[in-house]
Structures are given as structure tokens and as C-alpha cells.
Length: 419
Image (cartoon, rainbow, N blue to C red; front, side):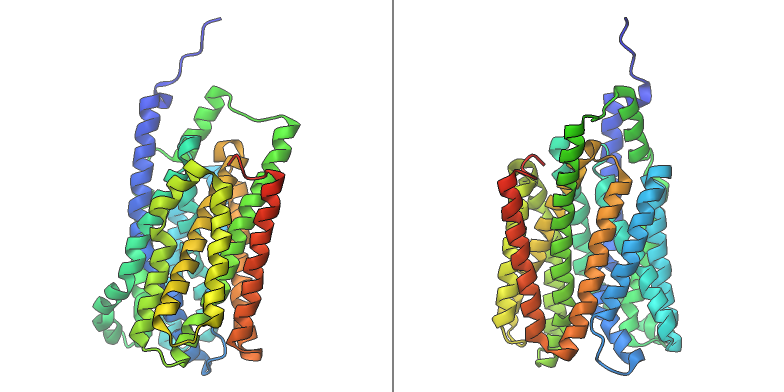
């Protein structure tokens, strides 16, 4: 029987060209949308404080954004499975831009309900940013998944680090619109997310997920044995738990730490610099993390993630709120731990489901970790008003320690070693 000839659009050259184009589009869109990543941390709390008339809700802005990100992440996965990555990513970024505009309107008219709605919708941009790492991996070879994820994360670094400086350029438009000065970054975020949406919708052709599905149907690639199905579920649980844990710890700590530093007397510019460097650590580390995951395996990098996160929490717990250099080390380590955990967890999730071509499973993982981040932010915000900052840090230190113990347990079972 003659071997079936591969269609022209599924030739190796076409697949390689499509993957190169996808990575370029992901990189550019992430670079642009990265501008919106620090806005909730830097400006959201100030907006809510002004509208609430009190300083008792430090975790609410981040929690609402993560809540919205969780809902949208799941919906984007369903949309990607039905219509492809291009439409799902474009819609996610566009909704993020819409959310930023709603926040601006809320700031203009001092509307707390509209601020809540705007922050929830604004989380769509973060959901799209997370979703993009899978778009870059649809056509990637299994041994290069970490590299593909690295591209998405690293590109976000430039925009995130540049955001505070770029915000100064829109001071005049903010004043002309008679908006509070701290609403300015949301103008920048709205433009960034809308521009990222346009880039994806116009340039992500062919759609990587649709092409990957066509290729899978042609080659008949599938995993159907009961053993593989069982191992996949365990591997997916390992990856999802790793991402959830690092997101939970980081979200809880960062929900209250910026306001704690300010209350301790740290200069506002120093607070801003520390947060920017923290965000840089979250994404810049991707330069090496993806390669390490491909080289050493997801399990070892997940262990490093749990260890670094725990060390960070220990340092913060024993450090005064005005100690710039110690907090610089601690927040940098916290960002590195998040990066290690998210990339190793993502690689495990990709390995768990037919070469990573199941957006619905990926979406469930993203929804779980962002919902967890929202709960952590609300928990930290409530605890800091009831018990104080030290008690909050002790809680998240214990959670980080439990995560490390979990990694050690699954390592003995051999789960995650092959991811």
C-alpha cells in the first residue's frame, strides 16, 4: 500500500515557517502587552484606596483582576479549541484593553462598582498573556517546549520593566482628562492591550493550534492506552499544583507587601523600583528557565521553584519593611520562584496531554492558578487588617514549605520526572 503523501500545507518547511511566525507574533504581542502587567500592583491599590476612602483593602484590586483572569482563561481555552489561538488571544487582549478603559471611567466618576467591573474585565489581559505561552508551543517539538514558553515570558519583561518609565509620558494626557494621577498607567495599559490584540488578529496566520490539529490528524498521533491516560492525569496534576502553589504564594505576598513597605517609611520611588525589579525577575529569568526545563526536566526545576519561594518568604518574614536591600533580594527570589514554577508546571501540563494540544485542559490549569491567586490576595488583605503583616507572612511561609514537601513526595513517586 502506497504511503499517503503529506499535503503541501503540512510539509516540514511550512510547519517550521508557521512556528517561526507564531513565536515572532507571540514575542511582539507579549512585549507590548507586558506594559499592562505591573499596573494593578502599582496603581490599583491607590485607586481603590481613593474610592473606598480607606486603606483597608490592599488585596482587592489584584484579587479582582485575577478573578477575571481565571474566568476568561477558561473561556479562552474553550474558544481556542473551537476556533484556534488567534481569535482567543486577540479577544483576551481586547477585553483587557476594555477593562482598562472601564477603570479609567470609574476613576473619573469615582464609581466603586464600575471599578470592580473594570478590574475584573482588565484581568482578561493577564489571561491572554498566560494563554500565549501555549500558542508558542502548539507546533514546538516536545524537546523544545521550555524554549517556546521562554519566548512568551521573556518578551513580557521588556514591557513590564518599561511600564513605570512610560507612565511618566502620559502625565499630561492624564491631567487634561482630569483623571487622578495614579489612573495614568491604565491609559497606557488600554493602548498596550488593544495594540497587542491587533497584532495577534492580523499576523498570527496560519493559526498554530489549527495547524497542529491538522498535522495530528494526518500523522494519527494519539495516546490511547489506559496506562498513558492514568500517567497523564498524574502529570497534569503535578504541573497544575506547581503553578497553583507559586501563584498563590506570590499573589498573597505581593497583595500586602507594597503597602507594608510604604507604611514602614520606604520612599515611594524605592517601592516602585523594587516592584519593577520583582516583575523583571518574574519574566527575565525565562532566558534560562526554559532551557533548564528542557535539559534537566520539569521536576527538578519545580523543586527549585518551591525552594526559592520558601527562602524568599523566610527573608521577608524576618526583614523590616524599610530594608531596601534585603527586600530587593527577597522580592527578586520570589519572582524567580514564580518563574521556575510556572514554566516547569506549564511544561508538565503540555507533556500531559497529547503533545500539549488540548487548550481546554490548559485553560483549566490557568483558571485554577489565577483563582488561587485571587483567593490568596483576598486572604492576605483580610489577614493583614486582622492580625498584622508578620502573621500574613508566616501563613504564606508555611504554604511555601508545604509546597516543597509536596514536590519531594511526588519525586519519590516518579511523577513529573519525564516532563
